[in-house]
Image (cartoon, rainbow, N blue to C red):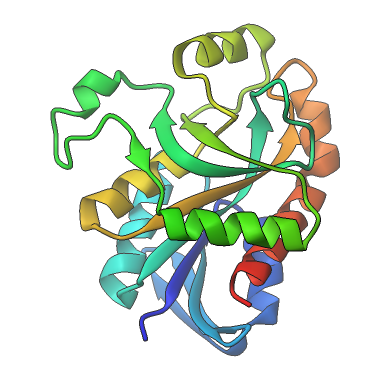
Length: 223
C-alpha cells in the first residue's frame, strides 16, 4: 500500500511522531529529512517542511514524487480567528484559502481553483480522532499567508475578507500542491494563540503543548 504523508512546519511538530515510528528510515532531499516507517501499523512518511508557503510546496511535491503518498496530512499549530475557538482547540480544514493573494488571480492557473477542498474521508477520520481524544474541535476554513499574525487590526482584515477559523503559514501551499497532483489532503491545526496583540506571548507558552496535541491526533487517526 502507498504510505500516508505527514507534514509539519517545524521540528517540534514532527519530532514526537518521528520518535514513534517503527523501522524508521531517513532520506534527505532538497535539505529535508524524510522519515519512513510504520505508525500504528500504517506506512507513513513524516517530514518537517520548514516555515512558509514555498517550503511547504517544495516538501509536498517531494513527498508526492519521491514517495508516491496516497494522501497528505498537514499537522501543526495556528492562530485562532473564529470567536468560538480557544487556545488548544483544534481546527480541521474543510476548505483552505490564501489570505495574502487575490483568489481571482489564483484561479487563472491550473488547477484553476480559488480555494482548496479537503478530502471528506480524512476530515471524518480527524473528527473521530478528536472525539476519541476528547479534544474540542471545529471543522471549517483555514487561511494561509506568509505572515505570523500578531496584530489585531491585521487579523480583523483577514477575517473580514476570508472568514477563517484559523490563520497559519503552510496549509494553503500544501493543499494547493496536493490538489494540483490529485492527492487527497487535510489540514489539522491546534490553536496556539489568538492571532492578536497577545499572540507572541501565547505562542511561546502553548507552542509545544499544541504541537503535542496535533501529534496525538495524527496517531489516533491512524489507529
